[in-house]
Length: 354
Image 1 (cartoon, rainbow, N blue to C red):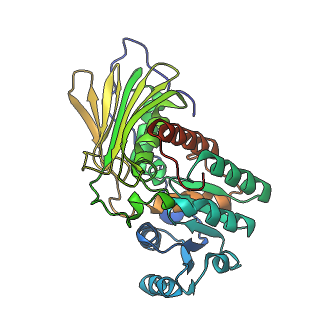
Image 2: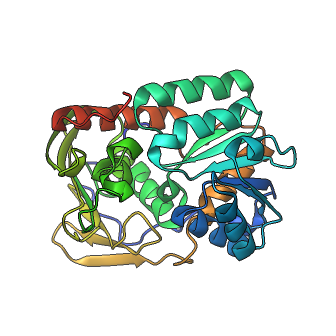
């Protein structure tokens, strides 16, 4: 991503936010989808695409055939498979949505790629950058579409943010803040605390503040983190400071120990954007001038079902023959995985098998 342009030093902040350019997800070409791992995020995704797009979910796969059947019955999906290998071999399927725990993303996405399917992989993309590199190489060699399901990047309010940055409305950006924290009761059986499932705050929650800061600042010049590990050894809390090439700072936090505001802000020499909670979902954006006076705000057209926008983006790219998305390019996904690796090194967190 190119660095945001800046307005002249004496330019006042504009008083009106731009309208989003995001297309109606219902207008995206229809594809046949297969879903890997029928958990909570998969349920949210299927519900969103069925309500707000022309996409068709034709099959679901699980290691537990009964679980797959129950999910299929819940969402009126024609076919349920008792293995992921069976699902990816189904020639009706155009694209596979990988919604397994982080520890399974690499294996399940690779299965789909090798079967010649396009793939949308839940965030965080993989456990580490090495796995991400292998998936990207395989997809390019096989000639299939591959994208990280960082749904935030495709939402209308984020297009408003992109335009604000591109036009330099805020002046020179100096500070980005973002946080994402929830309290989880300590439980070694819960995936958030399980090292073997690549649990912890960072890959599940912290990916959002990190990805947001990367969108705003571009590639980071430095990454520094401190944190606290849980009783199982995964990261329970991380506070991260990143810098851009221009010297701007990103101040980011994620935690499993407490509910945080889950908001974000971008502060520049001429004004500030504030994004209400949850900043990573369909959210209100407010523009304030340099003296903290409110100037304008944007409210998203769709509050629920925001996961539909990433499905529409994938469908449009595939229909146009594009192997990746300009809104969430694979090089950006890989850069972010390297950042997450660097944070885990600072925290001393290593997953089994790495």
